[in-house]
Length: 208
Image (cartoon, rainbow, N blue to C red; front, top):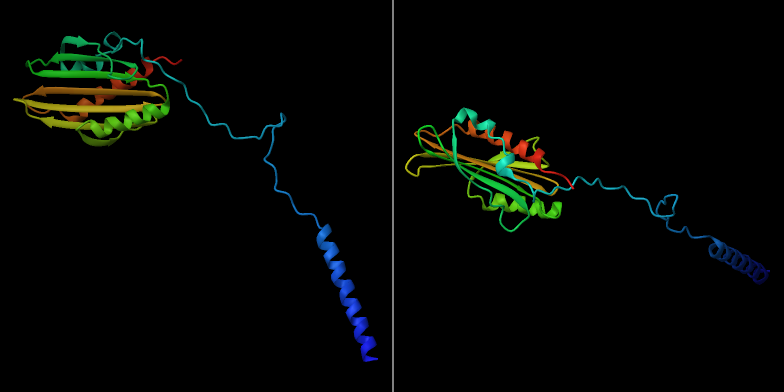
């Protein structure tokens, strides 16, 4: 009897093991889910917004720059130089001026339009690193990124400088305004004029 009972128990165990093995072999394995597809059968993706592309190569900034924001400074233009920014497509103008008291004043306006937004970003960063002026902080609402710089020196008189540059897509605009006198011109006065010229220049650059 013990041998017979043990044999039956062993048979039951073997049948159970075989049944479990069969279930495991037939159980389907979940396949990795495929990416969502559009009606055309192409995997869907969230499109990244593409902004406009700018070209300033044909822009005459000596003619297009409105000097009305400088009216309160009583500056007289003595010479203009339309030489474009070096090594990149774009336009520029240097206005050499004199104050009412005969001191030196300068305004330079640049609009650079590299081929891509990434190249424009590198140009924008390079200007920050090479300017030699004191950072004055970011400037809001004049591009995707913008910041200002200041400098004061005494080359025989008080010379106050303010520069602001901004980037929007592949467009980088820079405005540098410097005015000499017996006393330093307030930074707020320079900033107000420079920012007006910056925004007007951004609007003047055509898209392609």
